Length: 60
Image 1 (cartoon, rainbow, N blue to C red):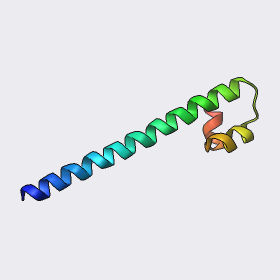
Image 2 (image 1 turned 90 degrees about the horizontal axis):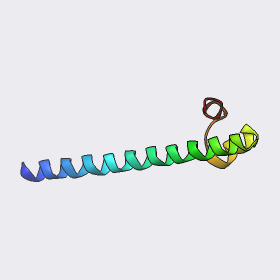
Image 3 (image 1 turned 120 degrees about the vertical axis):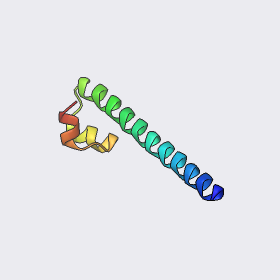
């Protein structure tokens, strides 16, 4: 039982780490997109460079 608990905790920590990393990447992409948008770059180009959708860019 202790091994199962340890394995579950390790899996939970790994999942949390992956989700946190993904959120950090999304935050950075949004920051870059805001800067590009402020610099007058077209939304289609921003989407290509950041992986964000045109809708996400419009909300920035």
